[in-house]
Each structure stands twice: as structure tokens, then as C-alpha cells.
Image 1 (spheres, rainbow, N blue to C red):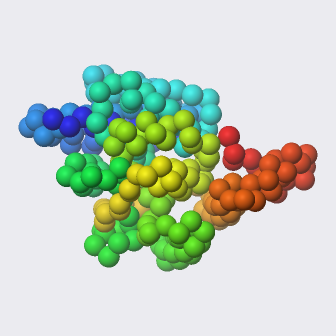
Image 2 (spheres, rainbow, N blue to C red):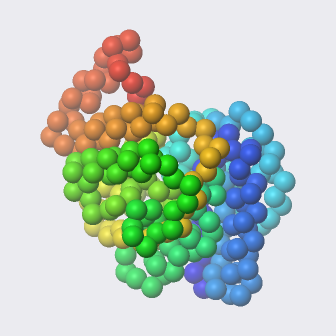
Length: 263
């Protein structure tokens, strides 16, 4: 029976993490009861200033593990979750956002897609024709389309969606990449996929179900600008012009146009 680890990074998610844990525990506990798979959920609290810890601590389940760090970066939280999952006998390890945009049945589709293939990883893609997407705005669609065009041009990716917060990988792929990740914020997903590809691991994408969450805490315009800067920076890092990034990082802070995301 396959053993699944689901990493859930959580930064100030007191209003949403409970609903996510309720649904994921109910769904995967039923699969475990039917001996279809075994599972664990690793909640990684990163720099929470609200009551997220108190909400998570109410769940007294042997399948739930909780980690806590002071660094507010999703990528960092995911990697720490990966490292913790590798301490136990997990066959496939993935991550999902804490907002329940990806329902557990959609994450299970990733498990089924990876279980019966030879690929190193599988990712959910919102922009495949077969995907079921609810609640997105025209602005969101346009922003995502332009962002994806830039990413595909810069990295020659075949993926229609690198940013959907639901991804799953085989244990050997996670072992390979766990100590190679240095981007911990906006470009984390792209860096992860790029490094796996360079390491010889194939990653496929499949259609998904995704429900936009109205209570997102992001400043959309600010986040979009930072994402674009992060992507161009990452492309420079993985190029003969990486010296430009090193020179930029050596500048006084007052001369920099955005906060450092290179960890």
C-alpha cells in the first residue's frame, strides 16, 4: 500500500486551516480505511502571528505532524516539510495550499496519476481544457496567462501552469532536490521544476479542480510584480550571467529595487 505525505505550508491561516484539515483528514482517512493508501499530513507553520498554531493543535490525529519556523516563506516551509517526510517511510511526497482551493479529491488525482506511471512528479494544472475552475476573475486569468507565457519562454517549460499549489513527487525526486532549493518565495515552484528536470526527473501535469478563495491575503498587484522580478532573477541565476545577481546582492540595501528572495 502506497504511503503519502502531504505538506501544508501555513502562514497566518487561522481562518482556513481548520476547514482544510477537516476535509483532507476525512477524505484520506476513508481511503486508508479501505486500504487504498496510507497517509500523513505535515503542517508547517511559518512565522505565524495569529492563532494558526492553536487551531492546528486541536487536531489530535496520529496522521498529523506539526513543524514551526520563524521564516515567512512558503518554499522554505515546503522544503522543511519534505525533509521531515523523508524521515519516515513515505513513497510519494507533495504539498498543497492551506486555503482549500484544491479539494482532497483533486489531490488524490495526483496520487493516482503518479502511482501508475514512471514519472518523478506530477502537478495540477488549472489551465488545461479539462480543468474545473470556479471563482476566478478576468484579471486573474489575464495575469496568469501572461505570467505563464513569460515562464515558458524563459525556461522552455511544457507546463501550462507552474503556480498551482498542488504538486506531488516520488521519494527519490524529493531526496534529489531537498538540498538544492535556494529560492524560497515567489519563484520556488519554477526553481523546483527546473532543478528536477535538470536532474533527469520527468514531471507531468494533469487537469485539476480548483476553487478561487475570496479571502486571499495577497496584494495581487504587488505580488504579481514581485513574481515577475523573481522569475527574471531566477533565469539569470541559471545562466552564464549569474554574476549579475551576485553583483546586485552586493549593493547597499538602499540601492535595491526589491527585497532579496535568494536565500
